[in-house]
Image: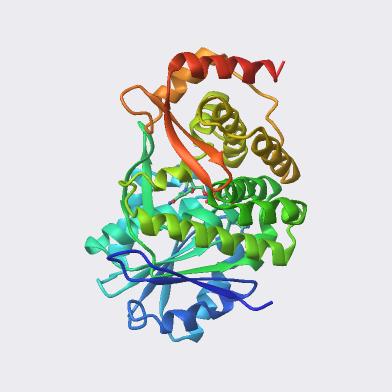
Length: 370
Ligand SMILES: NC(=O)c1ccc[n+]([C@@H]2O[C@H](COP(=O)([O-])OP(=O)(O)OC[C@H]3O[C@@H](n4cnc5c(N)ncnc54)[C@H](O)[C@@H]3O)[C@@H](O)[C@H]2O)c1
């Protein structure tokens, strides 16, 4: 199957290509040789984690060295804990220790954690050197590797320190997904479903038809789902690069309730995607009351999420606790909880919802878990 190339055009930024295909990792070095921002780099630094490095670091470095690049690497512990000030400090020191100069570049080889960490390292080291994203999770391929958000977490909350740094190139090798756990696969599928509902009828009904194949990791369907998500995300980001125009908020569909589920069930109990899927179900039902969302959308979305292996969670918390958690979320404004609701497939609204209305819907949600 030939690789797909999508060009991301964002105002006032250099455009960049996202290449999606089974064996595009083999062509990484050759692709970077074609990139003006990276081609002449005297040194590259590959940042990966200790799950991904044993699987794909040799292949990545072999491709880079075949193209004549000198590449060093830093491997951080896998997991969200690496998006920390301590780890970014170690990465900065290692970059300086390796003698990286302003004409060098960073290659992020891993999931969203590595992508966010390496992107942040690249955007801050010497006030910014290029970064190439080589996503290895479905979530990173369909979402985090495109759009330029980077960052680390603080004790006070997730992603509180970061930058916008568009990559110079994104290399999504679907062959790397073969080693992804079922939990991480489902997590990525939730972001695919989110994109499809927000994007268009065309994407949504294509995904509904192909959901079982995506859940079963069909190669062609996976590649097409990734490409469709990249096109969608590129469009959203090109309209709202820094989340200041009220367009990029659509990417938070499912996240208001999802974040509360993650916080109250204990981070890691459910995958981010499983929590987002639960949040999508909730937000669509809220939409029927507040935005005229058709019941058909609610049931078609339920069908889609079920087919993707994202069944409703067998978990709930008291409505008041859920509301408190939503208010503590950094996306809440002045204590008002906001939801992205789908008005219909391909159309959405950001609505400020009164506490009483949220509580009423949370009670109904809790009742389904009894
Ligand atoms: N920048 C953005 O726009 C954006 C968007 C969404 C999420 N994020 C961030 O992304 C992070 C989540 O990303 P994620 O879900 O990819 O998590 P992750 O990077 O932690 O990867 C999940 C797990 O899979 C492992 N893994 C990665 N690739 C693998 C492979 N090919 N085979 C086997 N194991 C593999 C990792 O080592 C890790 O244990 C969060 O920190 C989130 O804040 C960022």
